[in-house]
Length: 254
Length: 66
Image 1 (cartoon, each protein chain N blue to C red):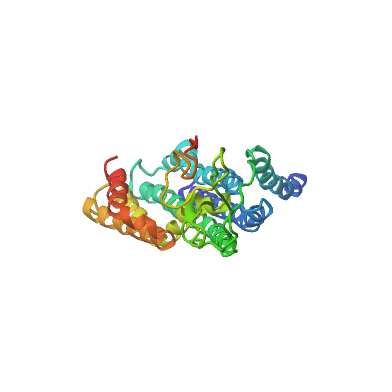
Image 2 (cartoon, rainbow over the protein chains, first blue to last red):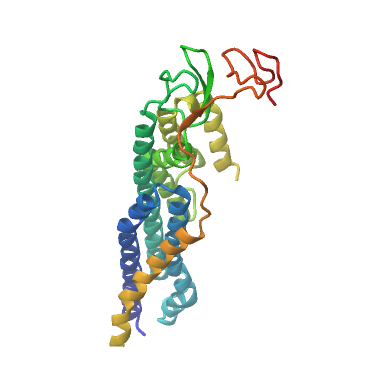
C-alpha cells in the first residue's frame, strides 16, 4: 500500500473514532438527566451509570493508540518511510492529537453533566430547607441554615430545648456530590489549560512548559475549585490554605 | 453486510440501555432519610435536653442519658 493510501485509511479511522465518540455522548446527553430525576436524585446510581458510559468512551480513545501500535505504525514503515522519520512522526502525532482532544472533550462533558445534575440537586435541597421546621417540644419555628448540609443542634429560642436537625440524605449529597461537581465546573478552563501544557511537553518530548508554569496553572485550577466550594459551603473557608497546599502537594509529589 | 448494518443501531441502543439498567439494578438502595428534627429526651422523666447542658445526665432528674 502506498503512503497516501495508508494515510487516507489512518485519517478515515481517526474520523470514525471521533464520530463514534460524539454519537456515544450525544445519546447519553438525553438519558442521564432522565435517570437522575427518575431515581429521585440518587447520586450513586447516576455515578455508576456514568462510569459505564465513561468506559465506553475511554475504550474508543484507547483504540487510537492500540491500533497505531498494532497495525498503523508498521503499515507506514512498509510504505518505505523511515521509522521516526518526519512523516512517520507527523502521522503518529496526529493520533496523539486526536487522543488528547477527545480526552479533553470527555473531561468537559463529564464536568458539565455532573454540574447540571448538581444544580438540580442543590435547587431541590434549597427548596426543602426553606420549609418550616418546628421545635419538637413547643412547635415554635426554628432557624434552619440553607448552606450547611450536615446534622447540627438548633436551640429553640422560646423553650430552650436543644433540637437535632437532620438535613436528609439529599442535602448531605450536596456536600458529597454537588460541591465537587460545581467546583470542577468553575475550574474547568484552568484544568483543560493545565492538561494542554502537559500535553505540549509530551508531544515535543521536552520541557516546552517549565515545571513552574505547570504548577502555576495547576494552582489556578485548585484555587477556582476551592473558592467555588466556599461559595456554596462557607464553612470550608477555615481550611482553604490547608486544602490548597494538600491538593497541590498531591499533584506535584507524585 | 446490509443486514449487519441494519442491526447496528439497535445493538448500540441496547448498550446504553444495558448500562443504565445495570446501574439501577446493581446499586444498593438505602432507606431515604428525610430532613427533620428530633430531641433527645430523658428515659427517666421524659424531659427534653435544655440549652447549655451536655449529653451525659438529665438536667432535671440527673438520670444518665446513655
